[in-house]
Image (tube, rainbow, N blue to C red; front, side, top):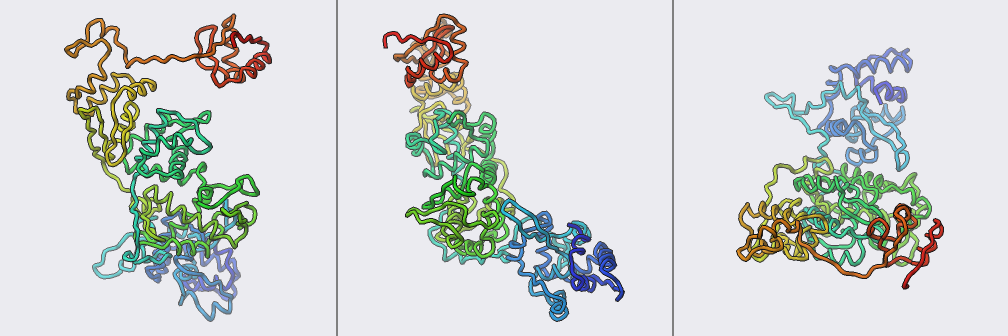
Length: 594
């Protein structure tokens, strides 16, 4: 929107008010077009713009700076929550109330000076009204000039752009910190648990059970998480996928070849930020579906078109314009504020009847009357779980407070930064490798791949033993790789005897060295063998086997190839179904000894 478009949408009585504010003398015979032309010239004059700017108080100036710093627009519902309502007055009321001289709110002061206008847009959640500062007007205004600029000897202050609102300007009343109980400070343990999960996925490449790990994998992984929990583990998987740290192929989860190493190499500050932004945009994680006690039929009514990222973005936008930057606030009060002003933040076209939702007792939660049981419960879940897990908010009983990361996430401040000095890894004589939380996450990820897992905490403990080295071999990690890594971690000192002995090549001499023959024939990794019974399919020509392993309908019954004319048949294969599938492709299968 520009100035002309804003003026053209105004009534003559409103234009007359603007003419008075901007010092425009109108001919009594002037028509609307002439009025607009004269006011437009005044509003694009920097000298007159500064004159109007000087009539504003600090609250009104702050509102303008927030709008312009945030891109020039804001949903009206959010704007009026912070800066007050705007009365739409008739011609008679304008003459009597004179809102340009005696505005009741900061928003009204701006509107009746022509500094903001209204526009409409059709968003993902339906139509809404926007408060807009015309771009050509913003260019003429001295937006960095404050009420202190004209004081003798006073320094001109500048407001940081898009830096959020102060606690005093926040729409939500802060809580007395002394009254907040059962505080759970925000932390960055999600970074550590994500590292652990990535290592587990690299070692196991587990088959998923829907959007979760299987019960067996969860049981194996849980003792090694700093903050265990089934829902939190699902959250880690989901934002890992959303942030390109985890990839899913054929129902199995593994670290992303490109994204995981890149993330592991970042500083903790950068890793926290990356996880938070992954959640902000995640489509694979639906907060609504995770709310305790809420049952959602995702295939019913309008629910299949539900966009989790859009709903989340709408709520986060309300928070960004509502929450105090540093004080505690009531989760219940915030929920009530959303219910009053933005109840349809996740409901396209304010439709509260087309989702099939119920509680644990089976009670249908359809209609606006169940808003607190659905939207209210979802808001509480997001604050107390994802926002807290990500290290963005401290928690208390019905209370929350933004952390430094939270303020940065909501554009109220800069993200914590600076260089990171990792704590060293300790390689013990008992073959136990101790990795502090403050060590490089990339280094701990590597240790977890070649050693047996012992315990987790401020210091993670791993044991270098035969099962760990075998585990490494399966991933292509050689004894040479392990030795080089541990020597670097150990400050290039000689490795403890227990570790050196374990990593010695086969055929070492009694003095600790290896004979020439042993060195020449030594394996690059510790050698193991497995013995098992197997079914084998043999063909009479290589071309026949090529057809089988290259045809998906046949290949799914087979395992490792044993040469040009033989392949292992999976133990789980239905042999009758396999024989029938071969016949469908012109191959006769004969079962021998079965």
